[in-house]
Length: 112
Length: 112
DNA sequence: TCATCATGCAACCTCCTGGTTGCATGATTG
DNA sequence: CAATCATGCAACCAGGAGGTTGCATGATGA
Image (cartoon, rainbow over all chains, first blue to last red; front, side):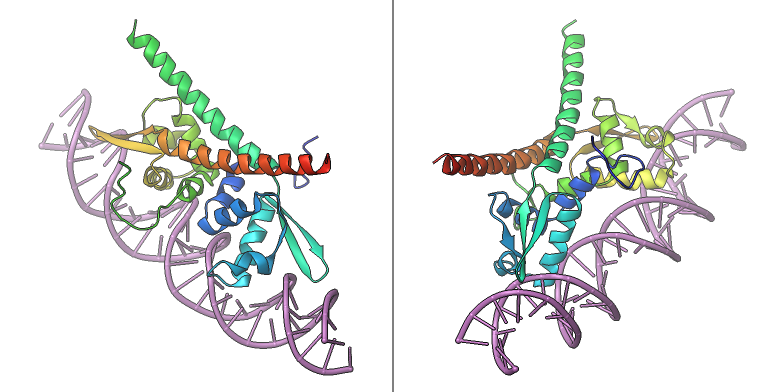
C-alpha cells in the first residue's frame, strides 16, 4: 500500500543516498549487512568515535529505514534492513538505463 | 591506473552518495542522464531556485565526478558522466550480496 | 560600439551535521 | 542493596550546505 503518514511529495531515494553519504555510516551499514544485530557499544567498540557519535549515525540510518532497532534488556540492538536500499538501486538502474539508451541512439545515428 | 593525486585513504563511494543525497541534484542528474549537454541557464530555467544555487549544485556533482563541464563561448555546458555511478552501484551490489548470503545461511540453518 | 546575455565571484545568512562532554536513568550482577 | 554497564538526553561548538543578493567580466549581436 506504500502508506507514508507524513503526506506530501514523495521523498524519493534522496534521503537514502544522503544517509549513505558518510563513511562512518557506510562502514556501520556494511558491518550490519551480515544480518547480525549488534548493540551500540559493540558497534562503537572498533571505531575511533564516541559512543554518542555512533548513536547519532545509527539514528540517521534508522530514519532512512536502512536499519531497525530493538531494545533488549539494557542494550538496544540495531539490525540491517534491505528495503530502502532496493529503492536506491532502482534509481541507479533507472539513470543507467536512460544513459545506455542515449548511447544506443548515438551509435545508431553515427552508423547511419 | 586509478591514480588519485591527493594520496591518502581511498574515499570510496561515500562522496558519490553524498552528492546524490539531494533532491535538486538528483533531478539535475536525471535530466542530464539523457546524454545532452546543457548550459547553466538552461538547467536553472525549469527550477524554482536561483541560477547561482543551481551552479553550486552542479559544482558539487562535478566534484563527485558525476558530471563534466565544458566552456563553449559565453556559456558553460554540463554533461553526465557515468563512471562514479558504477562505483556506487558496485557498493550497493556488495551490500546486497552479503545480505543475500546471510539469508541463505539462515535458511540452511533453519532447514537443518 | 553598446546593450544584452551567461557566467563567475564574493559576502552574508540560517540551519543542519558531525563530534564532543557531562550527567541522569534503567538493567544486571555479585 | 551497591557497583557497574549500556543507554538516553541535553548543551555546546565549529564548520559546511543550501540559498540569496549584488556586482564584475567576457561573449554576442544589432
